[in-house]
Image (cartoon, rainbow, N blue to C red):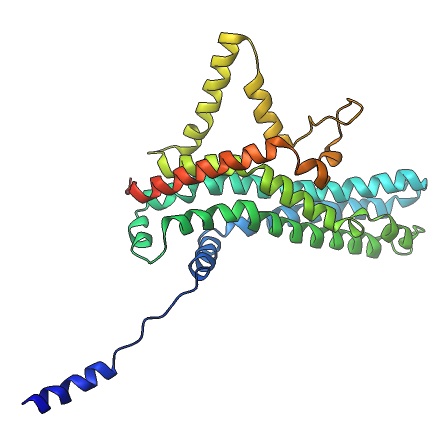
Length: 307
């Protein structure tokens, strides 16, 4: 009898599968991929913005080709300024679109899964609340800046190629077009700007939006905008000052109020020099505030149920 039971037990023991050991980064990696799969607007919206800009640029180049002798600025300084402005406008349009997408994504990231009750499914998976929240904040802080950088560079290269083909044979020096293309020389500067400003400097804003997204019973946009408005109103009425409004403006526009050694305000690019930017107290205070907001979002996700 014992021999028969041991014989029956052996096949079952042979079918046991050893538990799979997952690396610490694998759940995070797949969580980020899940966010991209579920939120295609994160890359579709910047692509649409680039396509719209290229369409307008194409029309403008065709119009310039027809009236090139009357319209084209042969003054090298004026020509350089004209081309630089268009390349910068393309980058601003794409990066601005990515910023807007990041804001609305953050507002819906944790609120949406409570609204459609999919949070019950995601909580059943072996993914911690910390990993889930960090994967969501990675989208606006890392993924969107990198995507907007790649799309911006690709768009500016296409602008250069289009202008070269359209103006070929019109008397315009094509070599000058390539030489004056500012983006050819400054892609690393653009990437650095996106990582520092759109990533690190905006971290408190995205942390706040995720916190509201994890808490709001409904209308997260209203709950995100109402507290700053109330704080500004109370300060203005009680003390007739606008320090809080200035703090918000500084956070949205970048550290432009930094002072140079001679006491004059620095320009925007000067504040992005690593020595100045990473010694800015507002950067580290903002990162600390962002960490508190994210910790609150993790706790709320852990205990908040479906709406």
